[in-house]
Image 1 (cartoon, rainbow over the protein chains, first blue to last red):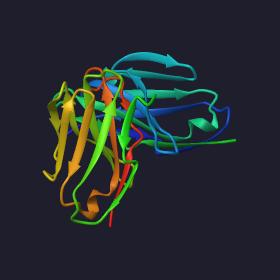
Image 2 (image 1 turned 60 degrees about the horizontal axis):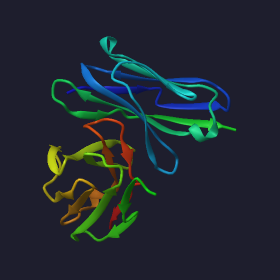
Image 3 (image 1 turned 120 degrees about the horizontal axis):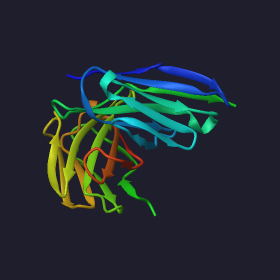
Image 4 (image 1 turned 120 degrees about the vertical axis):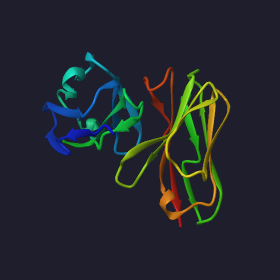
Length: 109
Length: 112
């Protein structure tokens, strides 16, 4: 089945820094989403981005489906950005929905 | 006005018991889901309903039975609870399959 790998697994930043999180997938996908889980456990859908680039405030995401990766950019990070960031894909062959293992981000004040 | 609400938020129960978790969404979405997050934060889809019809049923024990009485509700019933069922269970909804999710706040189930 499709493999979804996220990197880095852990990231510590100083407030105000920028970061790039990566999601690699091993096969064709027809759906990709980014989620944020805050330290209190709440899950929020950030982007639905099977291809192309989208921006929402300080966050933006780019998916290059032909090269099987997606990037999530966080600019001018804030302590409220802390938490775990997940990508999830739908395998276009099996239609299985698979989450990556996440990137744990900690932003220090 | 909570968009996706789950009850209860916490559930502690003994092995062998039967329990239910309820989920309601007021977003008018046509698709609802149950996800399980284990202690290592790994998320996995369990079930998905579209307009009250089961469309995704991942490999979960048949002790887990979802029920969707209408488009706005998706409940999860678990029979004969086991220690390994301890996890956080998230309900979610979307308009269209796998698009623009809204999640509930989760139910932390602890089986003792």
